Length: 401
Ligand SMILES: NC(=O)c1ccc[n+]([C@@H]2O[C@H](COP(=O)([O-])OP(=O)(O)OC[C@H]3O[C@@H](n4cnc5c(N)ncnc54)[C@H](OP(=O)(O)O)[C@@H]3O)[C@@H](O)[C@H]2O)c1
Image (tube, rainbow, N blue to C red; front, side, top):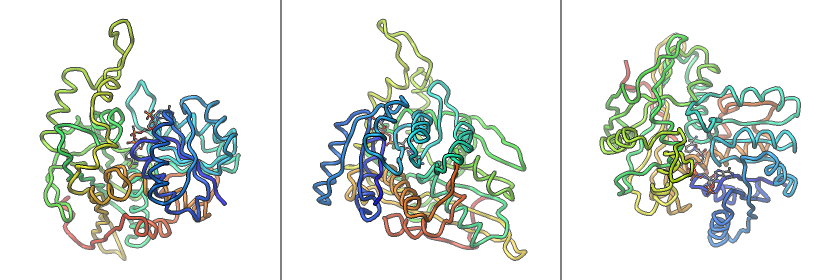
């Protein structure tokens, strides 16, 4: 008997709620809570229609620890799946410590006034979670998330030493809109307008946004222009796999998308500095979010698929080898199953599986963990069961020197 609370009712929260409902033998009671309760009620009604299962809903502003504590006191969950925004990570973790609730999220904490990813804020909770006998699983979406599990699987089954890791993330979908982001626009635009950064021989090397680009070939998709960006899992992966000499992250962007992004930046709409507008302080990027399409609504017309994976080079039995592990996910399949597109789907499915790992004791411990610190095998089995089959290629051209 396991009670779970999901916080956040956006595209990802929808998928997590659907997937928990599919695993009702583990999640015997499901509560979906968010800032706007109406969104939770809509998802609950869809789950009732699709699975005949009733889930509870509630309202919470998770910026405030005492509100999350109130929510936990009322429902007494074993675990919270945090799929609100990265700004709420610390307040939800604080509430977990107060009420003895296990924690899982998909994105690392970011201070609202500074676009910066690093795990330091959440790793600083290590002793408090350990002393409380609680587990906090960080970054359990697709990237971060499955990419860490893929890397761990590569290290365990295919290599004695990993030397080079390139995480490749392609969205070859078309939603028919001139410009839209695939998850929360504010978080997404903060992420991709930052400087790029990669790890080489013990150092972090900074690049300008989208300065390094390369055409990469993705399975079942073909060639796509891909750009080196910084992504949070690089920080934990080089720490947990110290044999890595170089780790990079690549993401595809179309010309049209980058042109829109440049204009948005040039006219100041990507700024997170508050400005005065008609006697009120507003943040331009938050205003932009309000006028852009809701990522959760892109699903219906979305064609094409995503392909995300890890390209790895290293040593096995003294010989150099290459290895590529990836998943492809079709937007239309995701939409038909859960009513939202593949980017939300590929994030929500692993979040549910991570929660299932904790509640069934397959992932255990006390403290703060990144996903690559756990046994990848039961998680990888469940990925196939719950709609994200993965594939492996050995000794192939990784397209990197
Ligand atoms: N690891 C990965 O692979 C990956 C990939 C994509 C996204 N993500 C992460 O997944 C998370 C959700 O993304 P999304 O696309 O679903 O975002 P979204 O559509 O913007 O949904 C966010 C939800 O959180 C709620 N929320 C925001 N602030 C809140 C607060 N203070 N208290 C309670 N609820 C609050 C929002 O409520 P309102 O409806 O009231 O605004 C909304 O329901 C983000 O953290 C994102 O970074 C991870």
